[in-house]
Image (cartoon, rainbow, N blue to C red; front, side, top):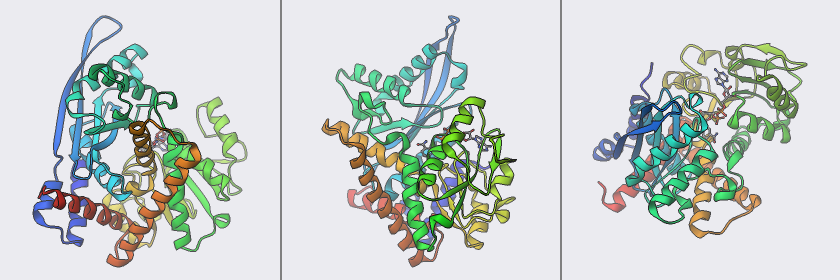
Length: 412
Ligand code: NAD
């Protein structure tokens, strides 16, 4: 199994080589600036105390406070959190929001906890990492298996401990307690905006374009809906229990109801059931991995027929697969750009919290579109200038911005 932190370091080294990055800067950027490990005791409903291990990694803060989600998952590890915090540094820099990169995680299966235990864990985690977080230090957000409800508990705990209302300490909150309009579908919406730009560059018409989406959750299902409303034909989708396919296109609104009723997308009327592996290899214009890491590997990359890959998931393509896709001239819009809509609207949420003045949905979406298009165009310019993949082009954009901030501030 690939070590995610080693992968992240390799990607950085590759970008550094292309731009001839100063060696000292590279040495600093290869490691997170700070990693905190915490022990969080939770009194279980059966009266026993269980101590959970958590982490918060701050990779770089030269462009601003650290920013990144909190993951509650049994497979959380220090290396995973360190890698994710480094990717957050690049993501924030790529879309030019004034943050560094951070990430947190707790080793836990939240599905095994009662609501009361989950609340204790969430509050306990914030209490333990409080010395290093805050609206001007490090601003967490949701990630895998954490959600707006958990963000509200965490914001409340921090505010209580500080002694004043502090909504800007965390983003992804419910609207009623300082969340932003548009945050719920920001990742899908941001992905849609960059896809639109990529389509223009390749002279493609949405009306003649088919899409396969792996993953029918927050990111994948919302993108499917946006795409069908904008003339694309979504021909295949999958979830953990299997995939469905129809060359005529899938009615996404009805599919959502089917998933609610049956718990899965498979067996949807007028579609053919496929395996998850088959979905990835369909002859479509656009393939959207929106589920897990390491889905496109050296074993299946050569069989992918899509012309554009929009990485809504984090890390869906292994470095070896990436080389094969590039050789086959497939335009891969990398995760740090394709799914950056989430952190972009998190930034808008934080700005609104600090001003205590709130925007309507239209205003948020206009700002998101401008920001995503700018990021895509800047990366695309690098792609042409350096003759590299869109992933490397986005890394170059980000690494240059971060190293330049480090230089200006005297961090190197
Ligand atoms: P989610 O839990 O809402 O949805 C995940 C979906 O993937 C589910 O439908 C699940 O059934 C499906 N899935 C799981 N295993 C699968 C498999 N083997 N094959 C096909 N489908 C499978 O999660 P999400 O929030 O949509 O996140 C998905 C990805 O997008 C993750 O990599 C996440 O890090 C990334 N992402 C999400 C956001 C966001 O705002 N939601 C932001 C940035 C990145």
